[in-house]
Length: 238
Length: 309
Image 1: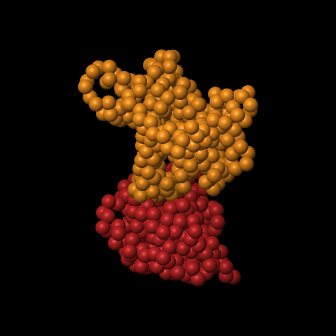
Image 2: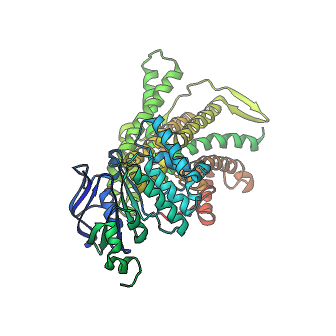
Image 3: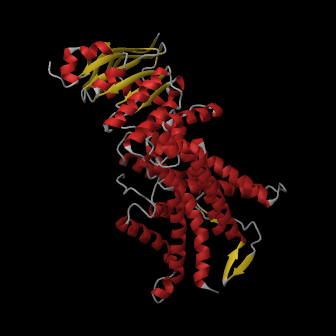
């Protein structure tokens, strides 16, 4: 079953097209990654899915419904959560408050409390720092908090924008392990990454984006072996 | 009688009213970065609404106890101010959310003029005398006299502010408002309707303004259509003094400003050898405003230096 589908999606900023009519699909349960260089239009694509930027053509379908242009605050209750670029931590709210905001749309208090414990088990550092302001956390901890916060809404589809950005290699490993774990629990994931190798290693399928268009797509393992991808995104000589 | 202690008492009373109004400025600034210059007029509308309801009920000889009449007047004022502030935001400020910062600022000044004129048409140009409702008890403490009205104002203000702090820091809605103030885009991703959060800030600020309006009218026993102007400017000063956008700052700034003003008015005659009298009281607030803007524009408790107009 297709959970998310982009059909000819176009986004423009002041007359300049950042996304030039792309098609992309994410099946239920999949971990799909969208890789590409800086400025290729990956983040814009994600923002368009979430209703954070206006679209100029094409459609976004989620659970067989057209959600093009639906404001982001209405998407969470339908199970669509996003970890934004740069993590978007509420810096003056405590770790616990940040996580509580992730569950803002939920009213099942008992289950929320349970999920909070699950997040704290997944990220023990967050439990240690639960009453500290989010802004005082390190970059890696903030990324864990951003992922934990998104998980607090019990998403069906999780959109991750560059979770490895600005993190030390060891932390990147840890974050990717977590992403794989979340995926294994049945959450569908669309992952945007510049770290193509790691992304392709954990993904089922992948899309390659260049200057606003999808240039390649297929099973992640195939792309990982593709000489063009190896040269352009994995830093290897062809 | 001890002038110093007496002026402290008067200053704290006035300061708690400033604090209530300053909170309205600071909440709106915190969430959308707008100095809502029409906020003083909301205080005025609250006072005049309470005036009409209270004097109307008393004149109609309903036999209701005075305390209940005042409570009804307060509830009416809160209701009117809340609806008013909600509408102002929706009609005047929301369409300008993406405009340059100057546009909503000028609109706020325009809204303030509109409200003054509407109030003038409804309540007339005259100073309306508000009757002394409660027999005022006087207590003498350490050479200063404190009236029961002053005690009631300070206690009510403290209670309302405590309630606000609980709402903002302990409830889900309050946390959502703080989240929206810090990062509206991400707040939207959490499922928070930003427009609702902004409306709540306006409505809560207006409710505080209504309480302040009733207080200031009862304290000075007078209400009039332009009473919100100077009061609003002083409360804005208090908010800047404490650090605009910061709730505790607004409370601290309000109290400090009240005390500075009262002490200034109490001693200006002596300090200038009788040249200037206590009617120069208003000068102190603006002296404070200018000093803060020059030496510490982020205010006492503010962190960021304001780069937003």
